[in-house]
Length: 231
Image (tube, rainbow, N blue to C red):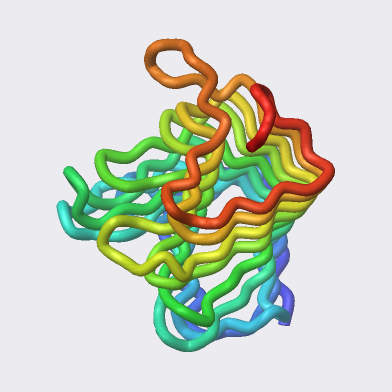
């Protein structure tokens, strides 16, 4: 089934609840889902498969989480092999879950083995959190595939694979992505593979180049330009 949504601002929080449907907005600039800081804006947690689609929206204003909560603009979780397609989105101005190292999240946050959304042709920006976070964030064996995405202007890590409370078995695959103007470009406690991408102008609070940190994880780079190089 397909649901077509007219342009406008919709103040709500959406859970697909296992429905393998396509929800398509009129235009990502003018069709806005505002989470009103009442948790994650869009949630997939019931085994939605790759026929499930969210397309042509701005996803904004997640927040209001408790100290141990996980979440973000789009939250993929559960134990049901959830694999939606996220296409042509603007995921902007979202707060991840948690406080002081408990919980966490980000723009797109994915937890648990078997869950692997594919986000493509999208912008993830202006993400912040009081705990572990990233514009793209995985923990507890979650995975993300990102193709043709701009990850920029986040007040946190651009791409974060792994977290202190979970194992390092988290995988993020980046293809044709640009990662710029974040406090850290890539954090690899788990596995991050990067191909045909550009990583530049990610600066720490001292203004120093901060393209990547491989914290005993695995960072694989192919045909990619990285400010400061890669060793």
